[in-house]
Image (cartoon, rainbow, N blue to C red; front, side):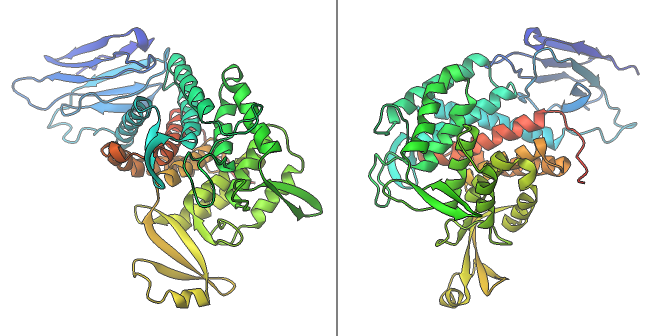
Length: 471
């Protein structure tokens, strides 16, 4: 039996394609949605009266199988770029000749599900004006750190044409207005942001280096005519007003930003992220020495402690540091450390969030600790307490950013592509749970996750190049 084939181009103008095969019809509707550069297919079947086996339509783009539609699937959301050729091949499977027709790809189903969940999360963010509660504050408010990650999310979605230019710029402009209102810098020539509520010894209007650096990262990715003025003011605050400490390293005197004016502590991940922002702004000397100092604080085989006097090692801050080092030295420089990171923090079907490096004396003091924590020996008379709480949203989000960047530029791209898919499958139910509990939504966490998902979708929509053989 011959199989008819249809070729469609310019999917934004196509409404539907229907093929009739031997009295059975498979219809796939391609209807642009509100983003303007995607289509939402649906499937309907008119089966032959004597054979209830439904047809299966395989949808391919550029030779790559995107999905199969069967009788129980409807409203599967896929994303297509305008001008791409769509190849629709309806097929009828004879139950006797072919008892096991190809089933829909799990990878495709996961991508469609995650994409839909990402849309819903961003719609929730926009509908609330970015206001939510926080782990440290029960009042719903705008969170500048979430705004910075929201900008970075929009940038990645625009790169992969998951949103239109109009929506991208409109959403970014609303965020810029909110950021201007939340600016707590004392000089009108500067911009800096904090939490909006008191934390430790700092007042509600305290500016924080990590918050300002994350926002500056996002602002620097927007078109200059949109955010250039605000981005330059943020960089100026980091350069001129943020508290700093001088470190003597390899014959150089290197300044690194501290946590905040009222909490003048040298926090490794904060110093790393701020340093990467200043490097992007072309304002740093001795970049290699700065990267080497950050690398020198790594505690093998676990990772970077929060500070030299705080030996907590957590997934979020490992990823902050590795992404910052990728900015400073290139993604190849962090590939080996990221492979170790996955091994250290992976646990069963997910990731654990944190661990603490202990001396033997500290270990003995924890003899009555809950049995859900376990220990393994580390070099130099140290032990590690692994906390068994699962990775938080922002930890998984920053991890997705890291592995997606390695998929784009690492040596072992097949490995990283598999890691991206695996983590996406892991975060899909987490996103769903977050959306089902909107009254307790925490945007500082969930928009980190949105940024990671947007990065992952961008890299999986890109052509897969063969991995580079290391030399």
